[in-house]
Length: 266
Image (cartoon, rainbow, N blue to C red; front, top):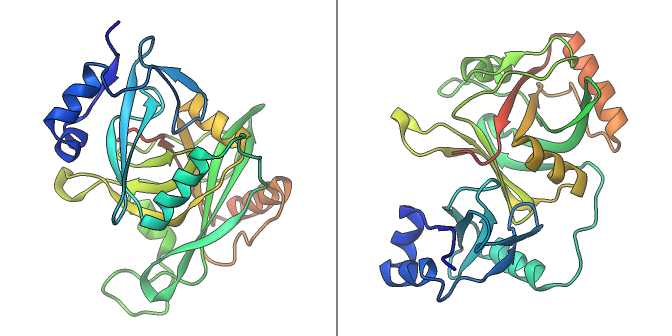
């Protein structure tokens, strides 16, 4: 039976025509696999499947995903990330759910660092996967050195909308997306210059662990809600109820913007 496999031009260019043709002919593709995004079983003889090539500094790993979870693409990661992922794939047992966590990651102007917290937010009786972003310091507008904090104005210019409360889901911000791969959060992507390929607005130095419930909700809804607030608005909250309280307060004080970002839809 022919494989229902998608090999993008980007992946083909990396692995070569010969290997791509072997995959499409079923010579080197597995019949069944564990989806690199949602970690549930898949079968490329029964359902559309994407080839996802992870490239490190010295190593490359070809993985498979449900086409509904990830498009066929090349994901560049550090060698440390890739080796860790290989160990994770090789290990027996499923991921253990973890509590929400905030991890400072990418440096941004004025030496501020973005803290990213993952958690589930209850809106109109339904749990939504969310990311909460708060810098560790004021964010200056690129090219300026003023003392003001331009974090929220800069995001509003990108299409994020002020959130007066959390009673409704924010509107979808097309062009932005959240990359969830190997069951972990890798990056928040923004549109490239002049319609070019998306680029990382935030990228994890080490993939961010998310809970099984968060990952399941993200794959079900195919989007992630992103909330952003200036420094001092949210703080590091160890529980989701405390995180929600902090979000509600930031929204009430006019210090919160939000958008729904498609899941790896770029």
